[in-house]
Image (cartoon, rainbow, N blue to C red; front, top):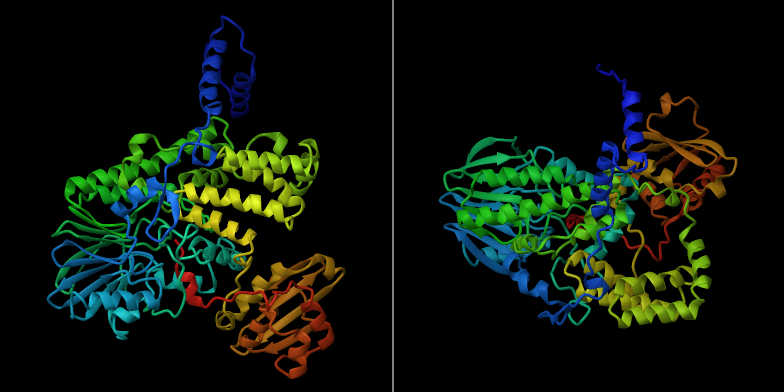
Length: 630
């Protein structure tokens, strides 16, 4: 007789199977025991002892004096550029490496030159152009943007000719405009926080030479932009002849942003791609970013592989020449990306939480043999937690973690149990002596949370972070570790927030009224219930409805259920002064820069309910600074 179970009964029967005790001899208990054994093989697998916890590491000194993991120096020159270099992977094609964050390729034709990517800033473009003139005097007549991060030297390469053909993803111009206010963020309101982290990631606070210097020159540069908008957008699969050369363009897949363009020269079997990097796919960036779906990157790599190119020119690595070499490199790189995703999902099925996953997912030796799997940019231990957060959230399914005490309260309770400050500090120093740097910094961090100004504590934490930086291979990891060590020692000052430039705010004041809402201080706002309307000189009108602890952005004041209590008329430049805390509302009203219909004193009081930037501490970076965002 067949049993019919509804969905609820099936779920309950499955739950019963998963929770029933193992009873010797029964079929179900045998299956359950096997399942539990398989689960334990994942959940109880011992984390490998790594470089941060005492594993032997051979150190070396980079040419600029930086102390680093020798494994990095042994492999980096095979896949990345550490000094300006011009290569010629195929006839009539030059690759200019280390003139900017990413390589630029130049294709020579009888009719002129075609550039693939143009640098991160106008300055990058100038360096590339100067180098280009050592190999060719022809003009650049066409530009192809591989992605949105390296399109800011175009005007230099085009020698000011804005009519040059610029080929790229149909959405690239919009992405560039969107990123003008700061680092890309899922919630643009927190752009200033992520922009500050960009500076750390790109070595902005590290010395150029000496033991604490950067090793891989992913340097942050800022300055003017020379962006030329895409004027020849291409669709996925579109073919086009450019300066006598036949190309096919593919826009379906992305990696670190969503507006990538893969370029294929079918007659020559040459592929220009943004999918192959000098380091494993950056599935999470320590600066913070919107989620990078590994499946999309993996699909793009499969597509690249299946074209069977004979020459691969990457926007993020050295070229690969020879069909067999390309197939081998792409295959190992693809398998590395697949390994990180699949083993993370396997770990989740085995009950691993975010912190456990970072110790579980480690490349086997054979994947480390693929040159481009050298973890010289990011280290894969930082990727699994991001995947966990995306597909499961922060909760690791351990109910003990649902209502944890605050980190400060935890430290205040643990330190006495561990014997007090001196005992914890001694234990941290002992861990340092054993090269257990990760444990040392975890211990001393309890003391740091209790008194971040304790000089001894700061130095021990700095010592641990510095030693971790010395043995790391990832440029991102080294940057965060070393930069914070230097800050603890008072050698650099790290901004927590970097607001957008005034001209960016002035150009879109309505958007920044919206972002302003998250700065309301609920302790100050009390019982306030006011609707402010902002009439800007560009013709746009928006509002804020402050209801006690919440400020609602009102995109269309005429349609809001309440009429404004106060109307403020001003230019976008004036709103930028308020947003950046460069002047008080009362000052701007008194000077006439803000015209008020209603109670001016009350308008100033309401705006003063919002958090201020500290003008003397704020680091305001021009828009060009936001281009280096891998």
